[in-house]
Image: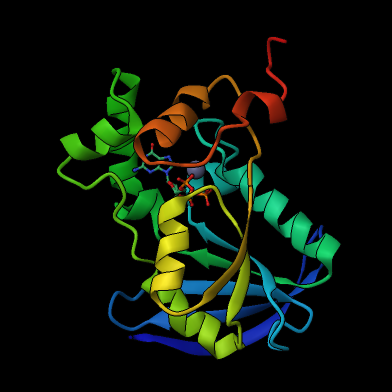
Length: 206
Ligand SMILES: Nc1nc2c(ncn2[C@@H]2O[C@H](COP(=O)(O)OP(=O)(O)OP(=O)(O)O)[C@@H](O)[C@H]2O)c(=O)[nH]1
Ligand SMILES: [Zn+2]
């Protein structure tokens, strides 16, 4: 695996003062980071989130997806626990990159769903490779996760590279009228466990 540790620093945030650890994937040139809080190498299961980059949702307040609220909720949950880890993975657009995601959004504006749009562009529905997480978690001494996710593929991938899933923590946040169809497609076509979609979240038009 070509992911190597580079350096760490403090990262004070609105939620907690995290430590940020930088990693470089020498094969792809992608720069990934991990935020940790507390002692994550003490052998106990660690509350964790593997968050895939979404420039539009994480930084530009887009309502097309649920990424921004999920990122905020994960950092908040880790702060509340006083211990945990968030890997921020540079796999924009489920691995197709930002410009192709814009192309995919354009197709969705014309009626395609999120999976059809990827496929029309010649990509798989989800091109992410989570094996990059293994050396990051190994470096930080994390061997067991309480993983905040609704994505069954993510759980499988983590177990596949040898990190124990102690438990899955459902992670729903940010349902709104603009992402309702997108979330329904994720549940129907990608298998996301979003059964509580309408009970957990307040409808904008309720
Ligand atoms: N190609 C494409 N990527 C998208 C789209 N909407 C969001 N993304 C990307 O999807 C990724 C987030 O994936 P999600 O499926 O929301 O979440 P997940 O990580 O698979 O699952 P959870 O852990 O349950 O949140 C980010 O990389 C986003 O940039 C879209 O319509 N098309
Ligand atoms: Zn997003």
